[in-house]
Image (cartoon, rainbow, N blue to C red; front, side):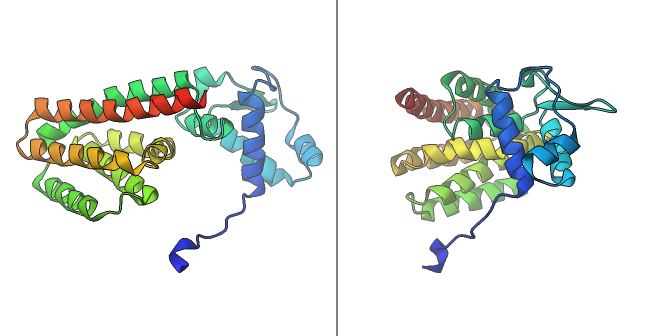
Length: 242
């Protein structure tokens, strides 16, 4: 019973501030180039402290949604030009966890380029220690309850992250980490159907065998099949929601 009880979390005032302004910007209610009121004015209008407003604006700026100009204030950006990968989280939240088809297609296309490349490099550079880690991970997968979508999602991310580590390019794991929330949100929806799990875990095992052989072409082909398998389901899900 205790395992089912997760901590109750309350959003901080800063998080509420950020969420509200994300929605205003993404919806177009705040237009590109529009100047926001001063921190003092925002604090008075919203009934919060200036530090809350300041921290919220800094957060929005880090995502590329606004620019903070010295002695001028905050200005709304065109997030398509200035947005960071974190903007994907904001888009996901704004659409209540269901991305529009064109956004999802963009994410999936980028993932194909990224993950096929990391798989190719992993076949060249993977170490014996990393092969052992993958082997242990696959052993865990075989013991998992496929109905536990959250745990399946986490171990799936761990598998793909280990592939990026094995690529030998230290930037790739950081890029994947920066997208972890959007990545696991999408894969979490995919794994809500336990019937999707066996095929994915089978692809993982096939990839491990190919990596053991340092078979670059085979590793890339398996990754391609794995991504197509997920894309087919996710696009069907998006089309049904629309």
